[in-house]
Amino acid sequence: MVNLQERYPTLYDKIEDKELDECRYFVVVDENYEDIDDEEVDVFDPHDYNYLVYITERTQAALGKDGIEKLYFNLEKDENIENFLASEEDLYGLKSELSDEELSLLVLDKVEEILKELA
Image (tube, rainbow, N blue to C red):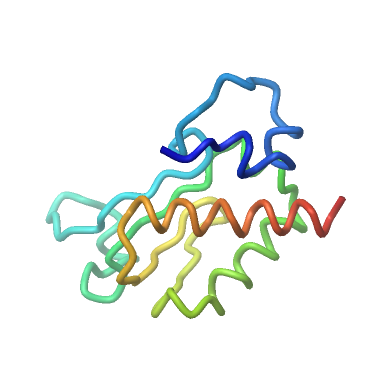
């Protein structure tokens, strides 16, 4: 298990609750599957975007508007991501061969890099 506080010290400096120890508190990555009742299917076709990524409010607050924009750009050009679509500032569709855990860490790595740049 990854020690998130050690791996992402800049992010941890920007949040109040230091007891958070799971990726899902910062970024939520869900497999995108075809569900007739799911309203996201209209935007994120499961054939084009196999993951839905939600950037939590605490991560958005840490990044700020400029950081969120940098995150879009960095994810869009990442070699591990085949397709990228930001439907909202906190919700993305991605196509990747990475596992959901690997993708969570990739997104958090990008967040940490951006926060270091903006510091």
